Amino acid sequence: PLRVRAKGVGVRYVGWRERRDAAGARLDRLQAMGAPFAAAVEAQRLLADLRGRVSELTLLNDVALAAANLNPVYLLETALRRVLATLGSDAGNAYLIDGDELVAVASVGISEETARALGRYHLHPSSGEAGEAARRQEPVLIPRLAEGSARARLLHQREGLETGLAVPIAVKGRALGSFVIARRLPQPYGPDEVQLVSAVAAQLGVAVENARLFADTRR
Image (cartoon, rainbow, N blue to C red; front, side):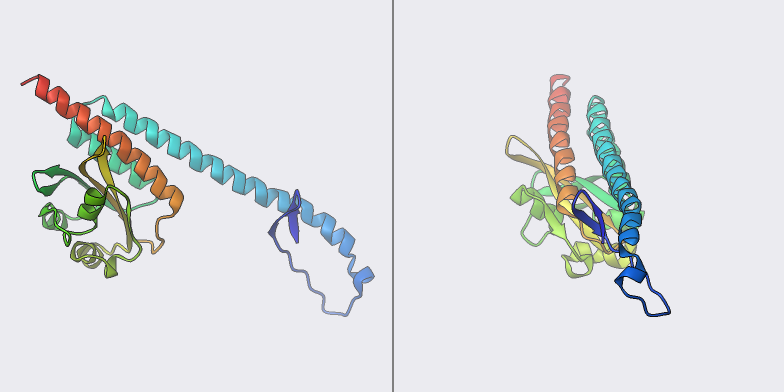
């Protein structure tokens, strides 16, 4: 076994063509040689975790800076691009509620034809995952777009997207819209990714509300 501080990080196999007993195999030496390998594996994992945390903090900081623009469309598109880049995703839409409809105000990574098809729809129970996230005000995972709502299946058929995530944009318990991302790699979003996108969406809710209040004061 490859161990670091009593924690197993892997296994190394060694074989011989001739028969050997424990003494002839020098198991003690093999075990000692495994320590540097185990340390290197653990160091690489820690470095990857650190890089991931730095990317997450950079994403949250970039969204906070974009919020100063007070332009909801610019804000949502900037956040969408940064989230896609950070989470290795390929496409996404940002929606805002207008009356009883969800309206796409930013789209990244999908064709204009698909964007038009997903651009506006009523907030009813069968409207899709974006509407469900806004109504329930909680994240909605889409492990397989091919088995999701009609809109999810459309993204799978036209854009080749495999898995997705929809999170609400809300402020003070009031839904303002939703944020939807997807990727072509058939790898569902994990709890840490859901938590990160939810944190971004919470920032967006406050920023969108501030932008609307600022616009109202100028009328």
